[in-house]
Structure formats: structure tokens, C-alpha cells
Image 1 (spheres, rainbow, N blue to C red):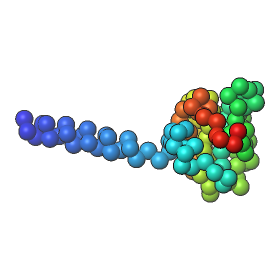
Image 2 (image 1 turned 180 degrees about the vertical axis):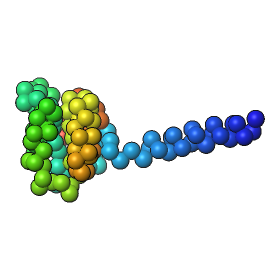
Image 3 (image 1 turned 90 degrees about the horizontal axis):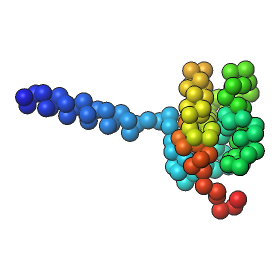
Amino acid sequence: MIKYLFSIFIVIFLLVMCSKNNSDVVSMEEFQSKILDANTFVLDVRTEAEFYGPLGHIEGAMLIPIDELSSRISELDDVKNKNIYVVCRSGNRSNVGKNFLRENSFHAINVDGGMLAWKPLDNE
């Protein structure tokens, strides 16, 4: 019985520790408060209508809609060695974009929560 409980404890411990070391996802709050600056490369994978729509967009973000990402990936060659923070409306399409970029040797990070979680900055 002790071995069984110990095994369960080890499995739960490993799952918790692995989930905290998720370097390919960052919350919008953490992104805005600790990461976003003039040198941060942001890729927005929403449609053009969404990019210019009511949720707005992050100043300086590059727009490549998710359905065009595979055909326009060469546009990102200049930033292949940088962290690419991928944003969409809620975090779903940006996760797909992040996975695609990582499969193509880019260092991409999904901004979870997307523009729904964006809070206007003081200078906006």
C-alpha cells in the first residue's frame, strides 16, 4: 500500500513540475508586464478585419493570418533566431501558429488569452 501511494505521489509531482516548465506558452498578463518592449517580436495570426477591429492590435505586431502562415513563413526568416510571440483573439489560433513555427525551427511562444485578455497600456 505504501509503494502504491508513493507511486501516485511521484506521478502527481512530476505532472505538476512538468506543467510549470512550459516555455512555449505565456499568459497575456505576464507578456504585458514582463516581456513586451520595443524589441519584442509579435506575430498576430488573426484576420485583417480582427487586427483592425474593436479588440485592436499590439503596436508593431506583424500580421500574418493563420491560414496564410505556411505560404508566408519566409517573411519571418529575419527573426528566426528571436523569440516570436504569437497572438490571436483568445489563444487557440496562436497555439496552432506556435506549433507550426516550432515544427519549422522557429522559437515561437503562444500568448495565451490573446487579445481578449489585452489591457490597454498607459500610452494608448
